[in-house]
Length: 626
Image 1: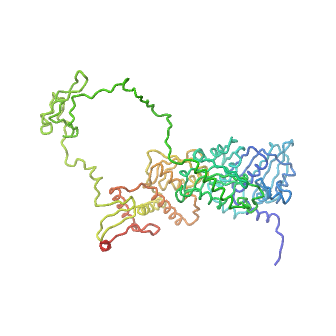
Image 2: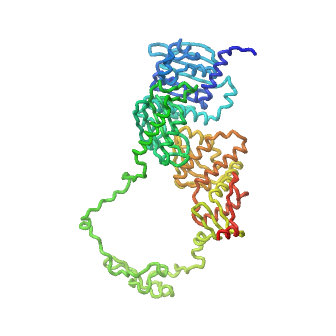
Image 3: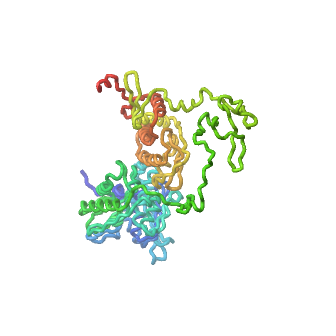
């Protein structure tokens, strides 16, 4: 066995595998370095989801020509000088591995200048090799251009996902940094289109509104807790705004984003019995703690934190969220907004003096029923004069004797009636409504869950939700394979804010969603408009909004299997989604329609997952209960 030292370019590529996993990793490292450099304006330019170009421009302190070359060496850092500095880290980067790892798997150009320098410098690196250093005119700060990521590692480039998925990860990393520094302006551009243009915000609440949208900012309440060990601040969402989709859950410690399933449990415990099962609330929690009480050097990407006393932090996070939820009222409030509403005058106790109530006319027959004899006056009606008006303005009606038995006699020319207008009652009058009210057989709907009907061998019971799932599965499977669909257009389109990162998912799967019957159009950078849904889905606003959240879960899954398996899995997921978001069956007519559609399916007895839809309770089984 021969043991040898790896060349620097190979060791850098191995290290890059830990730090640079995808284009989003490059964006994260470069933007964090720009923040550490003291920049107050950072611009990120992306092309082809980072495959072609990742450019990060800042107006920070800049570097000298010697430092510009040295920063690409492994473990080159300006954050640490002694071992004790590891226990007082307050910056994003400190290892000095980011630029060396990026230069190992991409072509990198750095233009930088310090404030005191008249001319800047340009440094070119590729495959961990320093290619050239030249003088150049450039503004103060640093301008990193990363081109052709993973050009020398084809296997890594091959495993990158689609552009929409990769750009979604870039947006996620961009948001995490932008939420830590509301005092810095950030700009994100993708393929020449501005995605985010964030100016320095007056407060964190304004930055949340700019990044996550007004809908999120209006549904959060503040959290504050001061202890001798940790300080907690930030915002948590109202229980009513909790969603099934994961998103808008952020934890920061000393200005650094981190993931912690342990503290996530503390948040969920505080919301216990306040949100439905499977829903996750919005939260943005900022922890301030002594740097010596945490260890940020346990993961290459620095997204995991180890606390010295994590149980105490757990209790503090739980207590402060519980206190915030108890301090605020989350019941349904009455909207007292009067803008745009008609003005209704307030009536005082002296209202009758200025506007007396007119008395009812005295020549009114209290026993007169306008619905008797199809609305024709009877013989005892007091209105026996011809059409006209009295001096007091009241109407006179013609005298009608035996109006129903002898219409020709009652409706004469002198009474201004035309006998041709009289239509006799038809035998099938009202048949249109009678058909809707009377199903073909006796059916019973129990709490919108089950349909009961008699069968030859006993009592047939049908699970409504599973029946809908079976029907929709067959429809979606046919739509995905034959590109045929039926869309029910909503009378009032529903607007749903999904976020910039989720817009990529809808753009990627736009053709598939259209084939399934979804009519979804983009509306800005972070909002969609649902104009129509597949047949069987509910078009109600609340259910459409819930459907979009569930649809994001389906689209975010990595469908890398064979096409047939992916198609069947997608149809099954959408069928379950449609069964939960469809309109409920409430009457026998709807139940009969559902049964007819179910029995037209190839396999009406079981769902695609093998669950039973129909159960027949035999007469013998019924007899056992008596």
